[in-house]
Image (tube, rainbow, N blue to C red; front, side):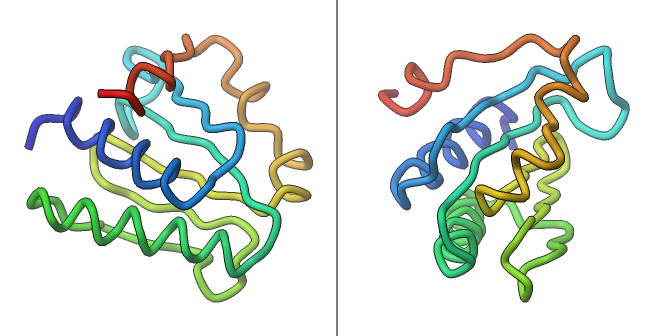
Amino acid sequence: MNTEKLLDTLVKAADDKRAEDIVVLNMKGLSLIADYFIICHANSGKQVQAISREMKDRSEEIGTDVKKIEGFDEGKWILMDFGDVIAHIFHRDERSYYNLEKLWGDAPMIDVISRVNR
């Protein structure tokens, strides 16, 4: 699977389910875990779960299975491992508390708008 295609697919899925403040961090050279982190949030646990479901469904359509999903039942912070891409889907309050963008402040941000419009 092409990592760039997977990244585009996941970002579009999040956008289609009205995820807010979608950020993509380029983790190449900074983390051995993944090449990219997607970080976004929603205003309710149900919406957080809907974004997660959409990402899972869209990834499967292009032949990529989710390796691991954590936090789905709580709907506060869902972590989805797609291999080269890790998605963090937060409830608004949890996102501001954990502030992953600051934690990984050395990671360059990728232009999300261009990915949504591809």
